[in-house]
Image (tube, each protein chain N blue to C red):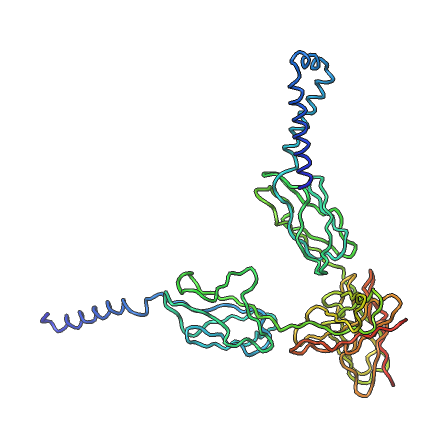
Length: 211
Length: 226
C-alpha cells in the first residue's frame, strides 16, 4: 500500500464496484402506449407526477403513440389516466376485447403498453312528429344509420309524438328525410338538416297532413 | 334440441318394445323369431335405435358470425344440412349464426355458401372447414353490399350550395349543373338535403329521397330561384 499508484487504483476499483450497485443498471420501464381515435386537440395524460399533452395525429385516423419523459423502476405502480380528454371527445376508454392496461406495476410485464381509444361525442337525432294519424311513416338520416319507422300514436295519445334516429357524431352532417309517407298522408320535415353540435338535436319537426 | 329430444324419446320407446317382446314366454318368442320377415324387422329396429345414438346429432355447435346481411337469401350448407340466415332486426346486418343440428367431436365440417342475398356483390367465408374439437364459433361470413351512384342535376346555381346525404357532404360552386354524392348500398335509404343555401338564392331538391334499388339513382334534381 505504500505505492502511490496502487492506492488510487484501489479507490477506482471500489468506485467502479459501487457504481455497479447503483442507478444505471436497474431495470427501467418506459411508460408508453397507443391511443386511437383522437380527432381533436386538448388531451393530457398523466401518471406518476408527469403530465403529457397529446396532439391529434398528423394524418387523420392514424393512432397516436406516446411515451412519458421519465422511466419507472421495477415495482413502481403506474396509473395512466386522462387529466383531460380531447375537446369534443368525452370518452377515452380501453378498446373492446382488450384487458385494461393503464394501471399496473412496472416489471409485471416485460413492457408497459397502454392502449386507449377515444370516441367523438355523439348524440341522438330526435324531434317531434305532428299530425300523424296512420302507420307507415319511415324516416332516415340520408343513407347514414338506416331507416326508422314511426308508428301512429296509440289510441288516446295526441300528437306531437317523439321520434329518434341513431346517434350522430359531433361535427358530422345530418339530413332527416321522409323515405315513406304514412298511408293517406304526406309529411314534410322542418329543421331536418344541420351539423351535429356538442349537444343532442331535438328541434327536428315532421309535419303530416292528409294527402 | 327439440329434434334431439324427439330422437331420444323414440329410441327409448323402441327399446321398450324390444323388452316387451322379451317378456313373452320363450316358446312363443321362439315361434315368432322363426319368421324371417319378423327377424329382419327386428334387426332393422335395432339398427334404427343404434343409428339414433351416432351420426349427425352430436353435442357441438357449428357456427360463427356474419356481416353485410340486410335481407334474406343467404343460405349456408354443411354435410347436407342447410341454414338460412335471417338478417338482424336492428339493421346492422351483423350478428352470430349456428346450424340447427349439432355436430360430433372429431366430425369434419365444410361450410359452403349455397346462395347469397340479391343485394350483395359477394359473400366470403373464413375458416370454412376443419375438424370439430369443441364448439365451432369461428366460421365468419362477410358479405359486401352492392353499391350504386347517387347523383342528379343542378340548375341556375349562382353561389355555393352544400348538399348532404346523412353524414356525406358535397359542396357545389356557382355554375354547377350536376352533382354526385358518395355511393350508397343497395336497399339502403337515401335523402339529399340542403345544408347551406347559396347567398341570395333558395334551392329546392326534387326526388331527393327514397330507397336505392338495383340501379344507380340519377334523378335527383336541385333547382335554384333566379
